[in-house]
Amino acid sequence: MLHLNQVTKRYGALTALDGVSLHVAPGEFFALLGPNGAGKSTLMSLVAGLRPVDGGVLTLDGVAITTADPSTRVALGLVPQHLALYPELNAEQNLRIFGELYGLRGPLLRDRIEEALAAVQLTDRRKDQVKTFSEGMQRRLNLVAALLHRPKFLLCDEPTVGVDPQSRNAIFEYLARLNREGLTIVYSTHYMEEATRLCSRIGIIDHGKILALGTLDELLTKLPFEEEIRFPSVATTTALAAQLSASGELSTFDGTHRFRPRPDCKLSAFYTLTESLGLPARLFTSQRPTLEALFLHLTGRNLRE
Image (cartoon, rainbow, N blue to C red; front, top):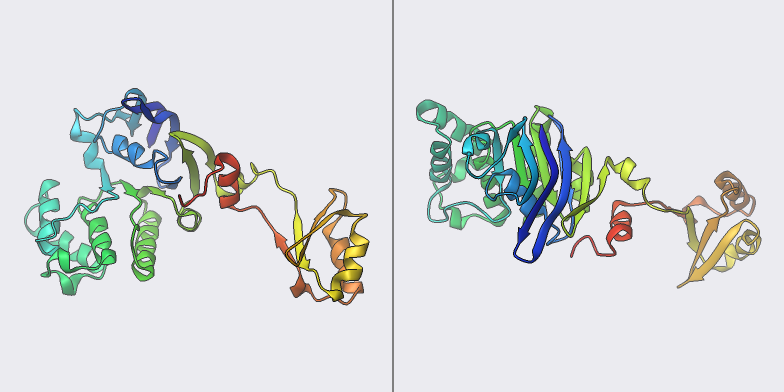
């Protein structure tokens, strides 16, 4: 559906996107994950046809996306990071403006506005000025404004920035339902929990480059990782710690033992030993790879910068 082949975008001496290649299939819920300034919003603006590419090819359903030809934009909706609403107007007036820009008129537009307001639980606030809305309410209205024309492809550029937990969850559930109904979604975020909760495939981007691409399970296989078991350094675990040196590497930091077994040491043998010493399972935690750990490994930067 969406295809990027070696797409590059520059702003003067700054290369915002550097030879990005990407394919998003119909019906996919794809996350573009990266810190602020990674190139996420730039990629969104190119796909939306708001800015021209400086190199490479970008197509939607086989048709090149350009700033000169707005016809491809009819097939997509854009939920921008910065609210695209008129604060002095009420919710219904805002939706009417956007609907008319998409060519909707008469009963069809009225029905779409009713459906949109109901979908994000704003029917009872339809006559209130948008400037009186909470951030979460404005974000929800911003979302449905992009869906009035029933696009088959939706771009969401960090749509939950500054949103309260209740509104964020409402947005998540609404987007998940739309995706189940067949809407293809590209969702940019710097929150790893959003990417893992919502999306079937994730692309990690930083400094304008796609660093890794795949499902969560596929991405985690790229992380060099050794199994690590942690347990408290207390009197009851002294005997266990004394027996582990032959089976792997044991270190102690801030009152916690950290045991990394050798590849030939089975975890079942470790837990058999703990049971023989009468140690309860609740003392032990197993550290596993995470999306954040992978991001730090690839970039050395905190995911939430």
